[in-house]
Image (cartoon, rainbow, N blue to C red; front, side, top):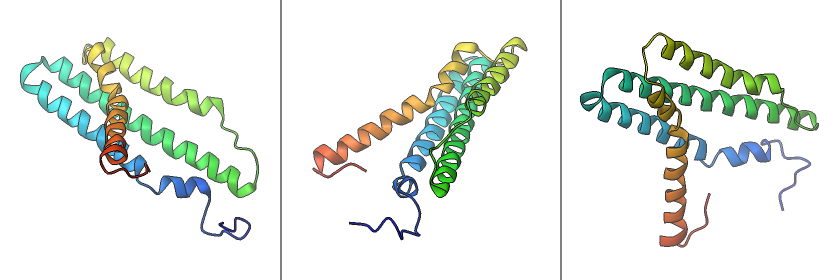
Length: 146
């Protein structure tokens, strides 16, 4: 067993984050956005490509913002030994900022709204990629998942 009383190396949250899932999900999100923009550029109207680019960029920003704010809140709470408390305003502010940016771009007729929403779904694509990766290692190699 690990001696948790004198564990100066960090918390269980930090150890769980070190297995690379966050980096793989972020990379898969960025790759799916780049691939969608490259495929749509020669075939789709420019508003669709701009919508995919804007939605995908906001998805990446939202994921990074969420990951850093949640890990900061938990690490502060774990260092103080208290129950983690997240402010609802910080949580809602991210979605408000993303919504305002997409609404403004749509009102200025810069982006296609369905394409921007499709770009925001890059997180879903990244989760499917990660799930297939884990299934591959669990079934084909009969290994434990990370």
